[in-house]
Length: 97
Image 1: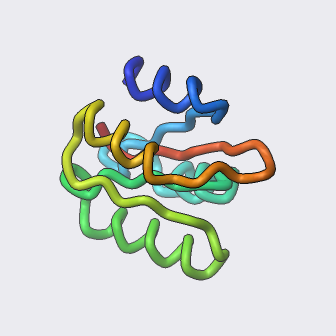
Image 2: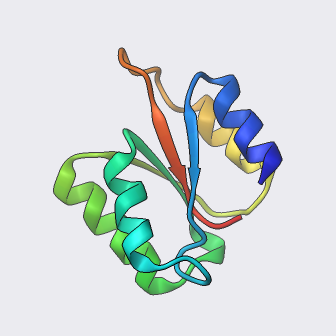
């Protein structure tokens, strides 16, 4: 998690993390998603329920969601490199590590 936090914060974003419901309550996932301007979801290590909750929330609220299939710093860094900067500050909520 510390490496992911550094990568996000280096881009000027604020890092929020949720483990996809393994330990954290689903209500917290909803709160993190609501607070985020951009969602980064690591699909390879979250439940199907959490994946669909993230996808539906982003679609319903028009939030950009970047799906990362491998839980690694290099995969996250590649995904961040593909994101165009937003004119406003970004808060990114990350999925499970």
